[in-house]
Length: 134
Length: 290
Image (cartoon, rainbow over all chains, first blue to last red; front, top):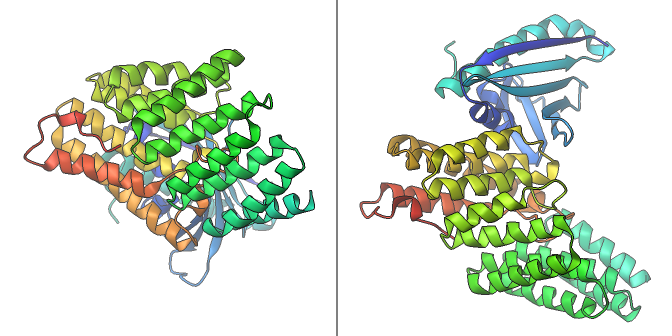
């Protein structure tokens, strides 16, 4: 199964990154390619991709008692994202592991780029409270 | 038993759909049927769930009635480990009604029972409940001590929510640095689904505001508390759209006590902001909405 790992550092404390990561309604503010989000239940939400307001993509945000990570699973394409936060000095190290099912392997490079952009936006938004410029 | 099985299952299904008031009938039928079958252990679940539904529906007095029926079903039957949960639920509901002295009495009875059972996890749960009442009553030092005591492994409490309450007690007690340590510990706690992660976010923002206030950073405090208000408003809007206000926030694994009440939380955050921006802001961090 294709997969990749990425990491970045935010100058923001873990609390401020954590708030953005645990609240799907804030995903459009930093996750590239997400235009809107409708929360349907605690942990369940529907994401509408940029430019595709008629394409609902059901997602699940999960947490794990034994590990300090947040998983986001796309229930349509089976992509899986595992996010971890770790304090580093006054800031936060953000890491993500992404698994892509074989049927979606052609999306590997585009997902790398999306996640890189998203991590930068997450780090910036947590630090300044403002999104990166266009 | 069949009446019990059907009634209990139906009540849970209705609660899952957010039809809390509709679930009373099946719960009552199940509770009465299983009482006749002389199974107080199962009757407990029916009355506890009915009380949970009533609390979620905002009918706190009705919840107390159901808890009384639960207690009547199990008392004197050697089921202290269940009695203690009914006392915890009673304390929670009474807090919601602002009847703090009665809430404290219930939590003290819970604590005494936990001591009698000599189970550290249950003692921790009782300390947690007493700590929340102390926080409601502006007894911040006592609240901080009790809440810190409750954070032991295996205690049937939400650890992130408890840490946030502890951070609030410390911030209001003029110890913002210790409060900030608890905030950091909160985000490093493993989070369970039943901790309702989305509801933790506005809680955390509010405590960030209280910490900023304790540091005399008024603008930052206003910004954080406004952020918390925005979060609760968003959550309310989302949950209303998802069929019911509290459908997704009722933890059936922890009847009553596991409930998140966004409207109440929103009121608290709004009161904090009002107190902060009002010209009569004198007691500063002591302004509390129970």
